[in-house]
Image (spheres, rainbow, N blue to C red):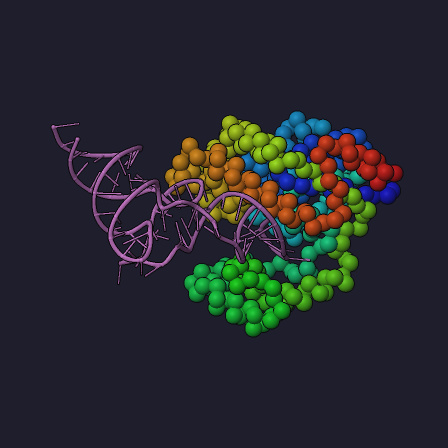
Length: 302
RNA sequence: GGCCAGGUAGCUCAGUCGGUAGAGCAGAGGACUGAAAAUCCUUGUGUCGGCGGUUCAAUUCCGUCUCUGGCCA
């Protein structure tokens, strides 16, 4: 059988999940998550994970299966994705990969650099070093080792990652990039179609506001509170939109009255970044009403 | 009514010992290969509350009015 994948991408709150379900039902496909927060079992409310109603409408994979304090990565996502398509007998095609996380979509399409997992202790060591001596020293080490690096001197996170790769394997990120261009091993082996869902800014903002209100009503604060009680305050996913604001509020750093606005504002910024990411991908066919892409989908699946 | 503290960028505030101003946040744009809903980069002309006065020159000093907060009556 000819296996095909449809990507459904776009900013938060535009209706990606709804389109995905529609496609899955119409063509008996399976929905696969590519949203960096919906992987987590403990982050359902604030990530707008599919409801139990949604889950009944079509098979969903890679949702809500990673437990705190485990942290998901793009590499782990690739691993899980390939494991899914190789071992899941019931998996039906087309696959509808849905998510607003451009980085993960890219990982699927193009693969990741071939870097083996790095020991957590080394990561912590480098993190501590940077915290202690500032990132200038770390950046000097990086630029001396890899003069081609395009990491910015202020980008602590990327400096840290580059140093991990250096110290663990003596790899230069700039060389990995070149190598990966010839390497087809990790590229998605299926035909693909990319559909983007987006709405006008005002409509999207209104959707976001409704969504935030719903999250708060559905118990976002309780969801976060129970994670804090388990001692996961520093768990990276709790720095994501909505969760961060809820955490700050529960920790008494901010006030409850401004919470919804703070979440809305962060979500707007998220949308902006998602749009910036997807904008450069010329292959995406954009729609605001589903109908305009239904022909393209039909054609693609034929 | 009296006293005090304030009124400076959309918001919170710095500052100018007199030469027409700058941070953070927001907004706008961008980058992005194992935390990515993260991380980072670029981008700030606004009657410096109004009106008068002093001065070559006032947002900065003086007077007055006005608004906000606090205290005293």
